[in-house]
Length: 89
Image (tube, rainbow, N blue to C red; front, side, top):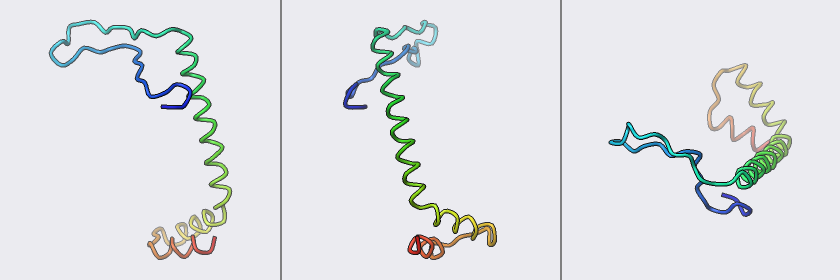
């Protein structure tokens, strides 16, 4: 689902249902142009979310390092430990 492609379902091939196991798979019917648009939209979404996650992690880097240090020392982190770390960072 995306604003460009919309809320559609496009299958590459259809597999037979439970009792139709011997029937061959049918190829999905959409053009190469639509396939390219789907590929481009998937790439755009992945790139956008990758950048979003990098920004999110960069903003919490000190808390991540503190949590890792605590886990290396104790091997276990309580909810209170996590809350204290997040309140600091």
